[in-house]
Image (cartoon, rainbow, N blue to C red; front, top):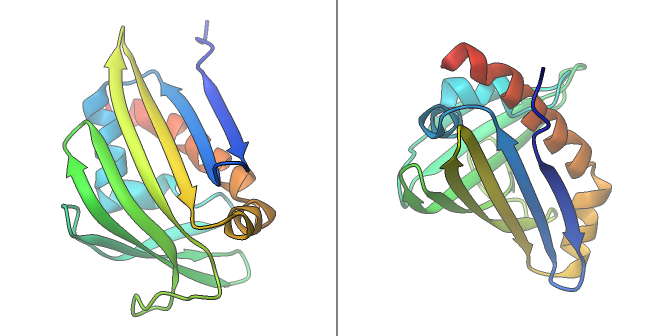
Length: 166
């Protein structure tokens, strides 16, 4: 029998935030690995039928992750994550947004700050994410672009990948 794992996705327009809480039936070390290694991120980050290819990644405080999401018709959307602080198996704090293939940020699209908190208890790893936007318009644009649907698919793909990594 499959456990019913928690998944919350809350858009808070008053604070310009998206709050996500997701539980995984996997060790913390395994979940962390899936968030910190480019080969594993490539397997779950992009919502099928889209997929992700990492161009470069330096997973450390002050580092970055530059990747492209590729659509079924060959569409390409580049993004860059600037890691502000990483505490191994505890948290990732970053700034994220769309860019070009060289990592130059695209000011026509919203950027946002991410705080990802990881914890493990009773065999369950929980990730608490807070995405904070500069303003309400950026939050609404991100929601309108299908972030909830796409990120939910990605997290489900992560859940499917984890047993193979244990």
